Image 1 (spheres, rainbow, N blue to C red):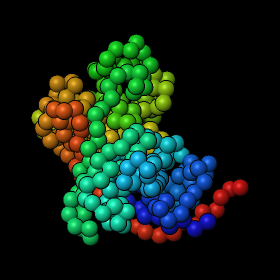
Image 2: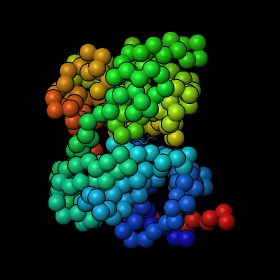
Image 3: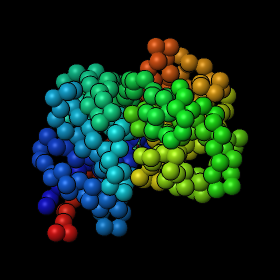
Image 4: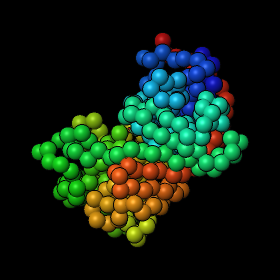
Length: 287
Ligand SMILES: N[C@@H](CCC[C@H](N)C(=O)O)C(=O)O
């Protein structure tokens, strides 16, 4: 099967984007396709697969599959790329439009001309903080903030935030010493998180900046995670390290994102999206 694709990234968090306005793929084939397409040896190479599809709930729809074929409910970097693609390719006419995700609808705004979109702002909605809704096992109290968390003989403190997808945020003194490769995969699969978890290590630089590194559920280390950067800012406010309503620069491995947790409870994300490759993927199914 010949599958036309566009490869895009937000700060190095790259996905293969399929325009399902033009063709369709069978539902049961999607996890396998995501795994193959994301593999740099037998596919194209990316952090996963994103479908851009018609929606009857919003102006355009998005679904995201991680590198291991699992489906996520939300993707911040993906949302900015979908917004850029949808406006550039005239799937939408207005610069301000709604995108459907498995976690609900979000509102996106593209900045710049159709031919040269500079940045995209997304209203990421309100974070979910209740333990059972992260979900995280344990006695359900209102929030999981700086809760003692021992793992692999290491004592940490976790703050858990859902941005439609689950995040465990750990503050560290020096980002370069964060145990990303050692503890990231263990925490991702820890039984306290029944649906798995995206793992973020975060260093507060000052009242306006954070350093951030991520181990993503289903994809491992990536250069950036948009929902993770939002979760990091929310976690920092909950831990009295930052203030609401201030735009925070989050320094990720692949570049910067600008995040604000507004007084009304909504989280705003602003940042770039880039297109790098367009082509056709020749997919040989195994059956
Ligand atoms: N890279 C993303 C998040 C992708 C999904 C995540 N790995 C999950 O399974 O929840 C982002 O930019 O937010």
